[in-house]
Every structure is written in C-alpha cells, then in structure tokens.
Length: 114
Length: 113
Image 1 (cartoon, one colour):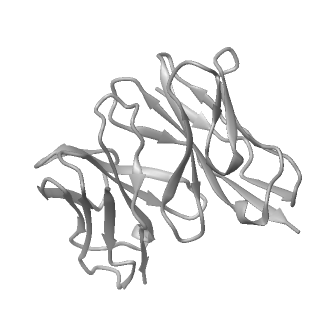
Image 2: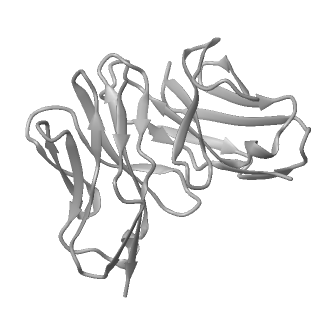
C-alpha cells in the first residue's frame, strides 16, 4: 500500500533562517506531487505541484521554492524565512493525470517563524 | 476561473442531530467534486467524491453528498452526527484535464454533547 511521509512534524525557526521540508511517497511510481499551505483562517493554498522529476509548477509567487530530485521525493525550501511563512504545510500525491483520482495527504509540518 | 465557496465557516450542532455543510462551485466546464475531512493537527482524508453517474454519493463515516448541476452545489450531509465528527471539512473541485484541486476555505463542524 502507499504511504506518504513528511518531516519534520513541527519546526520553529527564526526570521531570516533557511527552510527545508521533505516529503516522500512509498508504494507508487511517477506520482503527481503537491505542496499546500494552511494559514489560520485561510483554507488550503496550493503552492507547487509536480508531474515528474525536475518538473515544478508554481502557483503563487513568494518566498518559497520546490524541487523534485527523485521520483517520489518533493522538497520545499526557502533561503530566508518571513513571519508570513508560518503555517501548516501539507504534501499530497495522486496517481491519475486526468483529475479523477484522489489526492492523498501527508500528516503535515507545523512551521512557526518567530 | 473555477472556484469553490463554502458558505459557513463554522457549524455547531448537538450530538445525534442532522447536519448539512454547504458547498457551491463555479466552473465553465465539467468538474469532479470532493469532500475532505481534517482532524486537528492532521492531514486531510477523503470522505467522498463525485465523478459521474448517480448524483447522490455515499462516503465514509455515514456522510453523503448530492451533486446538483443546476444549482452548482455539492452539499455534504449526515443524518446523525457524533462527537467524533468534530473536524474541519473541505469541499474541493477538480477541473477535467487539470492537475490541480481547488479548495474551499473550509467549514469547522463542532459537535456538542
């Protein structure tokens, strides 16, 4: 069966520090991968998605970047964190290219920028 | 552009009462519709989805939703809620041919004893 992992689970970082969040998927090949952010009272915001290795689509211009160095690995990064980067970050995967398949979410990373 | 509107940000109900969480969408093409649930400090879990066929969709935990194309709605219902249903519920839309889900802002359901 497929599983999705995210780490770390929680992170407290000072403003201006770098960020690296990792997401890995097991039990499937060539998944679509997604990064979302949940800020208080703002629902889910799609940040990046990827349909293959090295292929990244950015939804919102911001202080973050994403990379997909391996088929089942998706990394979210920042060179310098802002206070507004605080939130709950969720990684998700799906198998289908046509949109009918479910997106499966990881357990999330709670990021607090102080 | 497509969008999803969840009309209620918070819904308090008593245990064993019925509940309806409202969702309206906007899209110029055919869509697939989803309801997800998020328990505190966890990821999202699929409750149910509408792809085609019968407009009444049954999901996990006793939830169901009805797709209404003329009213562009996909409301979620449960005839009798439990304390354990306390969570945030998200309606989402997936436009055919796109790789992306568009989420509503969520509805926090609180079930009180």
